[in-house]
Amino acid sequence: MILLIAQGGITVTGATVRVTGSGLGCETWPNCHEGSLVPVAGAAPAVHQAIEFGNRLLTFVLLAVAVAVLVAVVGAKRRNGLLTLAIISLAGIFVQAVIGGVSVWLDLEWWAVALHFLPSMILVWVAAVLYTRLAEPDDGVRQRTFSPAARVCAVVAACALAIVLTTGTMVTGAGVHSGDAGDGMAGRLDVDIDLMAHIHAWSMYVYLAFTLITVWLLYRSRADRPAIRTGWVLVGCIVVQAAIGIAQYRMGVPRWTVPIHIGMSSVVTAFTAFLWAHGVVRFRDSARVPAEALGR
Image 1 (cartoon, rainbow, N blue to C red):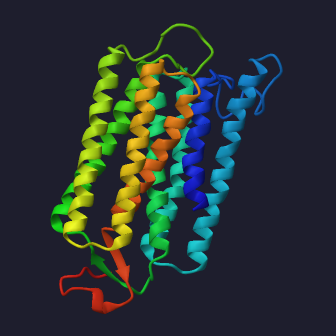
Image 2 (image 1 turned 90 degrees about the horizontal axis):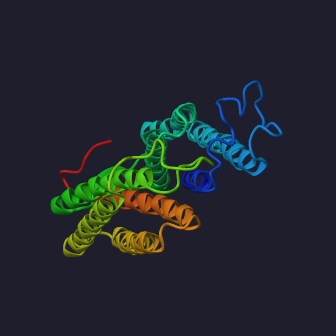
Image 3 (image 1 turned 60 degrees about the vertical axis):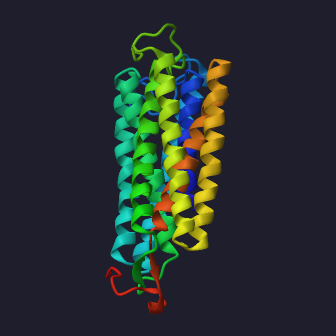
């Protein structure tokens, strides 16, 4: 759980860097400034250096948590699937560090920042699935718990979420928060931001619709109660996130709303992953497993 919270939390601090214009508080990478790993007085506004450097330091906290999870999985001799998820979580942090560095070298071009955000959502998804799978017995038998129709809708909903996240980065890329302290819209995505915001909103509605259909199908097929509860929590999170997005648009995207919206993106992604993970569960009680159950 700590890994999941840390993966989502660092996206919030990253959003704080963006809306405070601190993205180039450290103007290079891996050093903060040329020839110095740490902030240099006068090289940039002190508050911008503190915020950006603080966000970089949090990467090491996240790295320590991911290493601890990997060591625990290896030490407990858990199954290979868990080991793979733990390795992906750790390797993803290094990949994200490089992408973040490249975005700084490119002076925070909108598409580079988008490429920095989207892998974070993948890592949130991986951490959520890992958290769910850790509770399952290694010697259990895998069983599909969703009906075929529910599985298809869950896949479509997950794909819709990917579109929501991608279009969200495009709205941000065309918006008012460039990530650095400079003025103007240089390097921003040159599209009609109102149109882009509406595309983003409609993709969210599609995502919500397929999630609702998935939950309804789970009811019809009498799926496990934990899966249905997770589905309803996810629906609630999507509604809250949609309300935040609509409020942002109507208020002109005030700075304080952006970290909240980004944080909820991690929450929605995590619960989508939780629901996804409920679709295939390892049961110790073989009586629950039908003849067509999958093997290990």
